[in-house]
Amino acid sequence: MSTTVLDPYAAMAGTSRREFLYALNPLAKVAAVAPAMIMLVFVRDLATPAAFLALAYAVILVGARLSWRLLLLLLVVIPAAMIVIGIGFSLWVDAALVDSTAPFLQIGGWTIFSGALQIGFATALRLGAITALALVGGLTTSGPDLVRASIQQLRVPYRVGYTALAAFRFVPRFGHELSVIRAAHRVRGHHGGRGPFARIARGWGYIVPLLAGAIRHAERVALAMDARAFGAHATRTERHLVPFRTRDVVFIVLLLAASAAIFIVLFPWQPA
Image (cartoon, rainbow, N blue to C red):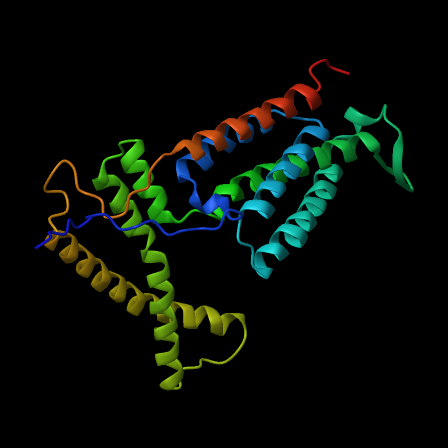
């Protein structure tokens, strides 16, 4: 009679080679882009953030599973937001600082100089590049995996990690409770009219039942955590492992090398 050894850990979900970002450790995705995001805060030229924006887009488009909504976000929303931000910052630039550059647009006595446009769109590209780099991990990492990786690799106390995760999961619960409360009000005919003041009045009517539902949910979560002896011991076993493997090291090295190359080649080390 053969004995079977049961694996106490759940098997990791498989991913295709093309969607490689999902198979990486969440901390690897953070470590790969964090230095570039920090350095971009101090960049003032156009080429460097544009190169990082292209790099982040290439990594996301190749390694992530993109729906039409995410494609709309990447290809329409973010570029449109950068254009609006670039124009807005260009209008706020003090003309006395850039009056030595060539005029770009002149309406009566008002002039916008090319230097103002450069400063505005450099800021917009910088914000867009930081956002795109953050999406490398944000689009392909779940909250529980990030918490597990922090506990397993960074040795964050599990009491802190899972408490924060439980608090974060209150947000979708509140959304569900709010939809139930709204449906109950509609069934009882509590429409309250139309217009902004009626909406504000309806909103005040949602506060008390929403708060009561939140208290009940918090009590249930606390009882469930107590029943599982949460916090009774210094460490806990993990059902889902999030390992840090060779592929994670390779990804970090490649992204850091690409970031260093971009800064070395494009960053204006000598002032103009």
